Image 1 (cartoon, rainbow over the protein chains, first blue to last red):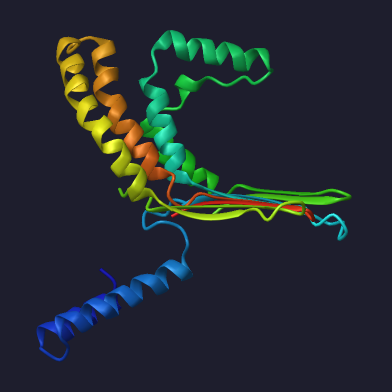
Image 2 (cartoon, rainbow over the protein chains, first blue to last red):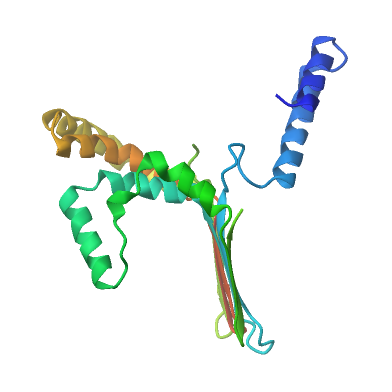
Amino acid sequence: MNEERMKILNMLSEGKISAEEADKLIAAISEQNEVANPVGSNGLPKYLFVHVNSLDGSKKENVNIKVPMALLKAGVNIASLMPDDVQGEIDNAMDEKGIKFNLSDIKKENLDEFILALRELEVNVDGENERVRIYCS
Amino acid sequence: MMLPNIIRIKVRSKESRGINLYIPMILIYLLLLPLLVLFIPLWLLVSLFTAGTPKGYMIVKIVPAFYKLLCATRGTEVNVLDKDSEVILKIF
């Protein structure tokens, strides 16, 4: 429990503030912390961002995508429920496309570690006409 | 885990007026509720008959997994813009 929260609870126990005021103060602190530190309370990034911006002013092409990491977790959860033969078919199809990736290698237990490692991910591609940026936050 | 409350869909193009919709998901959930009421006993029955088998495990787990997937879509944002058109999808 952080210091500020402790102070509020002490003020509440001493009767200096009402329960309603304490609730408002705690909510305000949580909001501040969220803005200051966008990652989740467990240190895991919450979102994957993909930005594609056109550098050519006349085109004005922009793509901004924000994907919650929870979606990745839920997807892996569903993938783990797939029968082995279906997983094998998917792996083979990806292999044919040149992607050496085994879906069954991603285990739910290792997912947090994987997502934590994604926090360090940052892809910046500056082309002639567009800039691509991929990062987690 | 909370289900999405609102989906915003905006499609605008140079030729047409486009749309800007805020869809309250509660309406969709209410529409799906009768189907869910029919589906849950069926799901429980199938789970019961296939209990102890790998297929049974999958059947039991798949419904909560899809619920989690739906909940996890909250916060998704897709924004595609060019000089003639704009597409926005946001799930709140």
